[in-house]
Image (cartoon, rainbow, N blue to C red; front, side, top):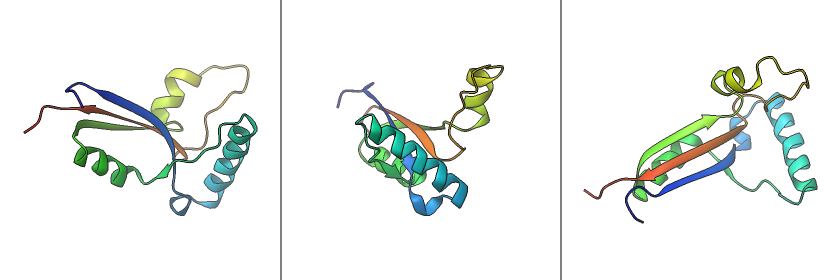
Length: 102
């Protein structure tokens, strides 16, 4: 891959990493996605996934938890429609950029 190539994808945490409340939230998310014809099929552990991306040649790797304060504060504060993000730790975005070869 060319230096500067980016990849960004959404994934869910592995079920074994979630408490009961988070599993229930993920189950609801999965049902909703499946009803739209977009079944959720990507489940990972963030540190292992980041390490694998680095092995594949990605130099910069970042992970964003949709339910974190970093997500909710700027995008969901003051909403009147009650739209909320999933529970913290359930859904993530991971991004990576190919760096120069060493």
